[in-house]
Length: 130
Ligand SMILES: [Fe+2]
Ligand SMILES: [Fe+2]
Image (cartoon, rainbow, N blue to C red; front, side, top):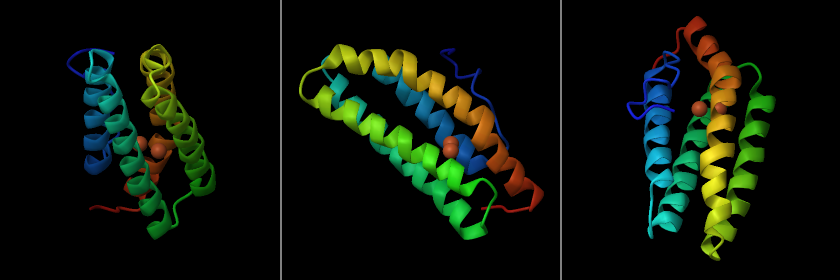
């Protein structure tokens, strides 16, 4: 992951791309956090929840393909992320730091390249803009 964010795939739907950029920027900040790690970790979770809700609402509104699979993947990640957040709040910072360093970037690269790319392709094909 580059500092400039240049490695983040740009999918071509501005509202989604802006969220992804913001997510990666916050992810970097959490990775470098000191005492504020638990607060920033919870902030990253909240931003992720908000972004998933936005994508879910697009899929609901427009009846886009792979909706069930995509929303289920969002739910699985959020369940896991929420559980880790509870442990971080109880002081298990190394667990949270490993999650931010390894699991989250890996999950997001895969998710952006798969289901999010398919979602944006569908939005573009149907000329949906917002
Ligand atoms: Fe997604
Ligand atoms: Fe996304």
